[in-house]
Amino acid sequence: MNVLEIPFNKFLGLEYADSESNFILKLDCKAEYLNHLGTIHASVLFALAESSSGEFLLKKFIDLKLEFIPVVRKVEVKYSRPAMGTVFSRAYLIDSNPEEILNELTTRKRVIIKVGVDIYNSNTEKVLTSFFDWFISSI
Image 1 (tube, rainbow, N blue to C red):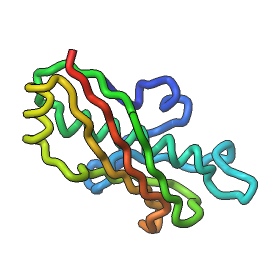
Image 2: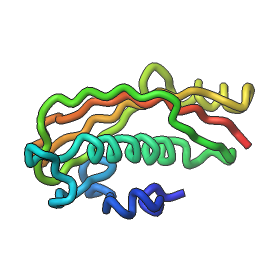
Image 3: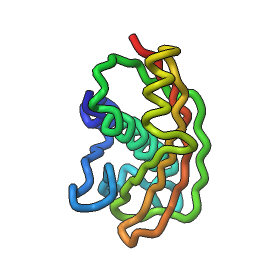
Image 4: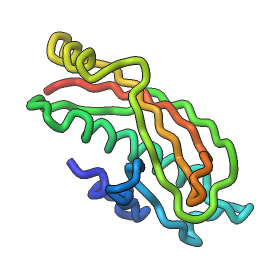
């Protein structure tokens, strides 16, 4: 699966970040993304964070030979400052490690994985912090 091929993500114009950076995805600012204050709309930042959490999981577990279905179950988001210009994402696992996740997925055929995603502006100032609970079940 390629998260950039999801129709909504194509519509937004999400892109992979530069491979030399620690970022996952990026989104260049467009006039259509702006809110009433002239900054990037909260829903656009959320879409970047959600897609980044999915991309992070795909990359983290790409070597698994299991087929699985991921679904977002719960989200917590905090916006810390207005975002302008190009925005970038960074993701990380919360309270688990890949070995524990794989063990639970192979024994129970399902697992909940918590992924943290931070969004940064082009000045590398954090503009959003989010936590996604993904329910994953193997097929």
